[in-house]
Image (cartoon, rainbow, N blue to C red):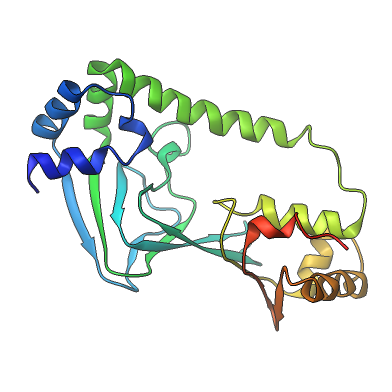
Length: 226
């Protein structure tokens, strides 16, 4: 890929925003980039694999699947370019992917390995600050969760469960979960959970199937209340 094309692609991503034109031209011309194309339906990375490089999705979309610890349920989402696959996974204690990423269409990635990322953060202050801001924002969001006002009704508990188990806070989501398992997660009866979900379906915020809950637009989930 030509240097000018790389320059334009990098500008799509938060890690490179705010950098001067000269710095971006140096990065585009001197960084060891990898380029990867993945056909629709093929896996990009799987949960548990070592995270040794960053994948920058520059076109197309990927399906993101996240499994519970015991594989008792899973969540499927669709995320489109531009997107970076799990920035937090390349550093820290647990340097492994925690989601499956599968190409939903023919997709292209720019990749940068960990050694190059370390060099970029050492050589370019703005890149280092962008990387730190990314990690800090994720940490702040996680710390805030334990201080949120506790849901008062079963419906609010179900909504909290659904929203907190998503990677991206908008768009279509699919929860592959049995009603009995969701009832266990809510610490309530299957009948009560079923009633709540059926009311949510009447309100148009979820669609129910056997062993599956589909959310057309996650952002509408909290905006529609009986």
